[in-house]
Image (tube, rainbow, N blue to C red; front, top):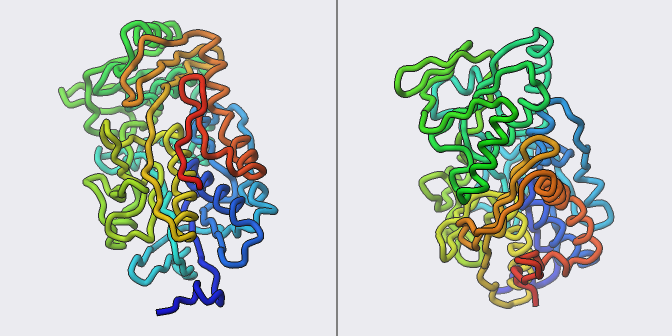
Amino acid sequence: MTTQHETGTTPHHILILGAGYAGMAAAIQLAARTKGRADVRVTLVNPRERFTERLRLHVAATGQQVAELSIPELLEGTGARFVRGWVTAVDADARTVRIDDDRVLHYDTLVYGLGSVADTVTVPGVGEHAYTLDGVQDAEALADRLARLARQGRGTVVVGGSGLTGVESAAEIAERHPELDVVLLGRQEPGAAMAARPRAYLRAALARLGVQARGGVEVVKVLPGSVELADGESVPADVVLWTSGTRVSPLAAAAGLTVDERGRIVTDAALRSVSHPDVYALGDAAAIRQGYGVMHGTCQGGMPTGVHAALSILRTLAGKEPRPFRFGYYHTPVSLGRNDGVVQFTHPDDSPRRVYLTGRLAARYKETVTASPWPTYGRMKKMPASGAFWPRGGRFTRVGAAG
């Protein structure tokens, strides 16, 4: 049986959903490597034209300026098409995606990179009374509220969630608004996954900033002026920032794709859906199993998944088998305000090594990491092969599937 792609009458349409760190890497790789080809068409769908630097949202949340990075401008000259709109449905059997409920896009290969958002559902009151950091608009809304509270000269900000986003946000708010009381609440102690010394440094830095960090507690309800803990205690709060837990879009499950208990698309070794091999899943939206377990969502791991998916698609179109994805973590960089930080270097399974950085050196390191994605995309646009190599322990290791 002869397909339309084989006759050359219709180009193979690769549709990428989501322009986060992973989706952008996939789009740039595919567009750069297929530029000028008539048999492949690349389309990137995202609800906004501005690229969201999730690594800087805690900075934007305190009113500090962050760059406005244009997705269409980056794609200019690659031949890729940008479609602005919200994905409202995916039909994996018909190979269609509905945009804003009034447009339908067809695909031959789908790259699913819709990512995750804060979990505002599990704990009652979060959706109604707490701020989140899901995008620039959310961060700017929080910045405005914090500024108004600061003008009053006093107030309490509760950060729910003691993970890295919670730690960075609490430190940033405390440094920017020393007149406010900042309380960090979470099930675990801040920096729990770090080795003893960098964990102690992180805790001491929070204390110097005046952050009241409390581990071993669980927020069970958010109210207009307080949060309730599992033990019955009520903690006053003029503002609540929620950073505890994430959830993914239900679109993948609704489309009939095989997902895990968190709704992430289960992939094979090449990042293809185990139920629909014409669908590739990236970043936070994917349940990607490695030798040490299922990857957790980070920019560090997201961008390589985008590159690998792009190269796997191109290998498949060339009649070759895609190669398995292999990834190991390298570091956990944490900012503690603008001039302080801690960097925990890790083993590939994300367990802590003995090596770490603190202070201004760690802050500079974190800023270098935070600033790296956009120029990396620009470099991949000009030199696509550079995307298949990522720094690992002072040298560059190949993690893609080129060739």
